[in-house]
Image (cartoon, rainbow, N blue to C red; front, side, top):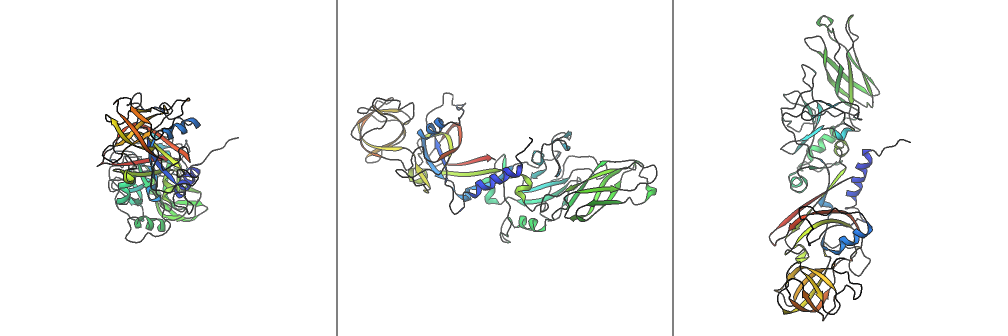
Amino acid sequence: MAAIITNKFRIHNAQSFKEGFSEAADTKIYLGIGRPQSWTNENSPDTPYDTVGDEYYNWDDMLALKRIQSTDVSLAVVRRNWTSGKFYDIYRHDYNGITTGVNLDSGAATAPASLFDANFYVITDEYNVYKCIRNINPATGLVISSTAKPTGTSTSVITTSDGYVWKYMYTVAPADVLKFVSTDFVPIKTLGTTPGSTDAYYGQFLIEQAAIDGSIENVIVTNFGTNYTAEQGTIAVSVVGDGNGATATATRDSNNRIVRINVTNPGSGYTWARIVIGPPATGADNATASAIISPKGGHGKDAVEELGGFYVMMNVRLEYDDGAGDFPIDNDYRRICLIRDPYNFGTAVVSSSQTLISNRTASYTATSGTFTIDEEISGGTTGAKGRIVSLNTGSTPKTLRYIQTRVDSNNTTTGRLFQVAETITGSVSGATGTITAIADPDVVADSGDIIYVENRRPINRAGDQIEDIKIIVEM
């Protein structure tokens, strides 16, 4: 049995995931940071594993969580910068691994497996996104490189001086440029309703409104033919299909070949079409051409489906000591997680707090010396072990936050939890202190589901620092 999961299914999954952030009974997704302790090789982080055990382990050294809001999420597509001298694919409705495309750098023939494997759209330095409709030299019918940047926001197709024809799709709003544009991805959306004439996306709304379902904006000459002499007069071109209204004319070169079909009316309602050239005069060999059918709804009607918006981008800003100290600023981290629906500590209630502390905090009175960040501490009474992730020695009482990992706490005789009134000792500093109170975390460890794990080289935090974290998930 032969079967495929279509790109439409991928887009559906991306849209559903994004919608989960804004539904009435919305999914609570949190960004979690963790792993303050070093990797064996700091330049080569450990590979994350998708096991039940590893989900527990990833909770053990979690530092803090921040909720991702619906405004922090956007669909996205691969960023393809317009660059002079590159060869761009045209939009085609039939890329299937056999239909010919062009190599971006050389112009050599390629065979994109699907539309979204083709380089058929670009973003310019004005953050305008365009779809390529035609990429040939009008005089020769041969594919050429793009040397004139597309500009403008017309609802009609845009022809540049190099012969390329483009379709304007949308402009990324300045606020979204800051939040969702990365070196590899750009945000994308479909509007459906007007955002208002002063909105940065109003131009896209006009494009959506002007789209013509089943139009034919481009016809490709697949065989130039021969002997189409000037004495033949006008060469007839007919569009035969299940739509109506499409018309075209033929352009002949100095060698009496058909090198271009000019669409004079794109028509509407086509799902298939056949191009008939001629009949030619006696002695002429039939030229052939293929009609390119617009996507459902027409070019620009649904940018997400047309350009392949099956990526979801989440942007989270960690600002200073976010949550009034929930995110420590005196340590680093090496792991980023996405956690779905974690519980408030001591309950089975899904948390909706903006930030959450995910480890315990001990208040203590110093006995001797000064503890240091990242050192191991051990309890004189319980034998419990932990690792300091944050210190506040200027407060009264002094406090320290600690994690207890499977390595730190592998003590089956005396258990893993510290107790009030016991003395703790630092393994590096030799400092000692007596615990006076232990504050529970804000979140139940191991609750919810960790749905994304990324191990990284260390990211240092500071009190005057903002980290702008962009996570891309491909569906």
